[in-house]
Length: 366
Image (tube, rainbow, N blue to C red; front, side, top):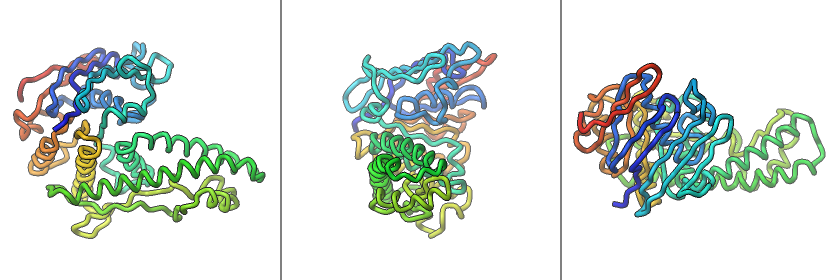
């Protein structure tokens, strides 16, 4: 199978890591160490090799090591579809994040064209019981993995909507002020809707095509108000209602991802904590399987502290599926015992922390 894998990763003044160097093969990497040692910081650096603000959605200045605050840099060598790419992303103190691919300045969307990275972090555990914003973000990350231009559509829509909302709050009634903004929102919003529906279809097909130890979820895209096909007309017709509310009340920014535990016919929000976690992992793995077919290689997977919340049977099943997929996965846990089921199918690293500085040590075995 064609591989997508990081063969070299270097962190400089990134969060708790003054300097960290990893040379890797395509197998999964299990990273263990005590809480607060810097394990999540390491996989956060990897997440910045994809479009967006990474798995913590942090501002560029928040990523720099303190107290020096000199700025930070992450460099890597990515093996992708029989090609080798050198990636560099960094930010100087007080400046925006920058990116170079193979020595050339690039936009972040270009990262989505040469690789795919998915992540699963503890904050997602409450996905099904908290607000729709988190589920939209989860769906948009999955959508972005299939269609890198989705990020541009979302940014275009949100920028125009902020301007429209400002007009609504100021009670501006002249339609000429709205027309161009609503046209931009309609064009971007239509693309967002189509991209999200495609992602749901891809996830559904990937779940149905494979027998897995994790439950299947039936997915639908919902909204408090139906999102019409003709968005531009809908925005124009809804101005009075929107003005009374002081914000835009219809559109893809109001969408929600609804999930049902298929075998039981129970809404995800009503499932047990363990079932909710299993549904989340199921969708994560389905995303990986769909991308392996769509992109031509399995994505790089980032799993932060996932093993700690699974029993031994589910943990072994997760590792089996990752290895069967052939993905390079970066997985964190507090102790090596959490990765015992992987054996020689993985590579290992230990992270320790001394006086506020993380130290990374490769291990040949557990």
